Length: 566
Ligand code: ADP
Ligand code: MG
Image (cartoon, rainbow, N blue to C red; front, side, top):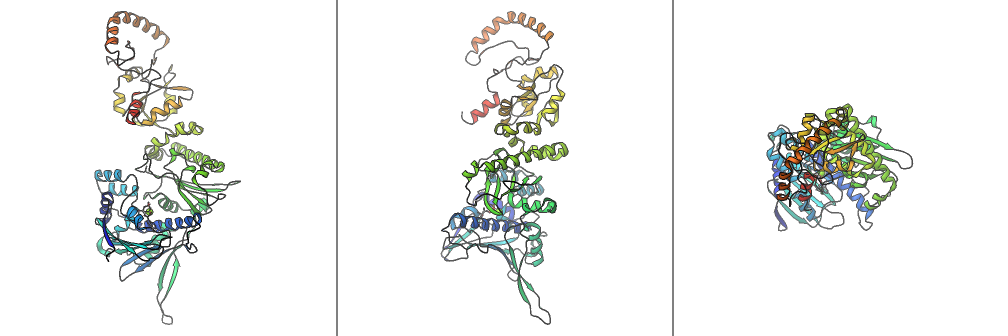
């Protein structure tokens, strides 16, 4: 065909594809979940588009997914009559990986020690459509975007290039046809042309999909009756969030999580709640087990999906989740909203704000419970998401108290374990009135800093803060349980008792006279760089250290601002 063009996969896509073609992921069955998940998204998008754009002439009367098998040709097709893709969309979303975090994933994959580690990384990332290449030696996709007249065929073996052909006509929606690898190509391959294999995979991974997943099956004939075919629906289509909590199996929650999150790993926690009264809603939220690779990138996916009475309205609904909980995945189904609601209106909506407040409280309460009841899981949570959650101390003053309770930080008390603030306060020495902290790039640098000497000598515990956001929240929060949070690097930290002070003062007075000339000289020499040179009682082994004024910014923060170009 002269309208066929051969194009190259983007470099990152090529690398990821190679991993799929050579199948480092052992659970091959999930390819079907990924294709069904995409088909379901496409159906949701079409329904939404037809509601928003009244001029879009499409039939949304029978939105469905069809699975077709050809045993002789060894092909499996997943077809939907959803939104479809234009030619350019095919090139941009199938030929490249737009997902943020891809570069980071590939870097970590290169460093991964063994197949197990690579599998886990792939699982965290979720490779979506490319999973088809785990089971197929060739993949063909034919699609037509709703509202457009021409279609597009895309075809590839996953080895570096793909071909694109413009078609005069195609059914609206998308059909993905897999030319399956020979059954003996890999021990983990099942027979994906067998009715029962497909039934089982759909039931296990995609039962909750809100559109029918249909398959035409053969019923063998008997002596009296000829063979017939019959079209069956493979999934129950029950919206999981609308079912009573006690009736949903953990495995069902987990598969649903994988659909909404595009993650391949199980979630750490599931939160299923319902709001009744003037504003009814159901929420099914998940805390993932791993932070996404793009947690700190502005392009990262964030927020939860919004539905209105079972109808999908939008992805990444930021009005429902504060930024610091952007890693929470799931669905909120609000019953009393208009289907045409916009993001801007949602941000203003009083009831949506009330829902958001309740969701946040519930999530924080869940983490708090984890912390008391399941310390291991809490530690996983905090290691993965702590740096993001701490941003809440800047954004969310309403929940400051709870946030301070669920917070953990490193401390000189224990080199291996983090502590919470309550633990620190319990261990405070007699006569100690403040909570001391030190900030820096890492634990070792901080511990070797001269600022720490006096505290070590005194036996005072110091919190060791190494995340950039730490600098900011300690300043903002100021105190905990009535105790001031005080930086060891700022101003005159007074560690002595009354009597020690009088003695020390006399000694210092003597030294000041003795060293007056030296200090005066140093002050002149360093005049451009320091405000003042003074004798200090805070050092025990280092000869000198640089300190900031109580109101100066700390060195790490200074570095952070510099890095940001300020
Ligand atoms: P994700 O689903 O996480 O976005 P995928 O790799 O599964 O990633 O799919 C990539 C993109 O390809 C989708 O976001 C969508 O834009 C497009 N796509 C895939 N399958 C379909 C389909 N059946 N209909 C329409 N678009 C699709
Ligand atoms: Mg997908």
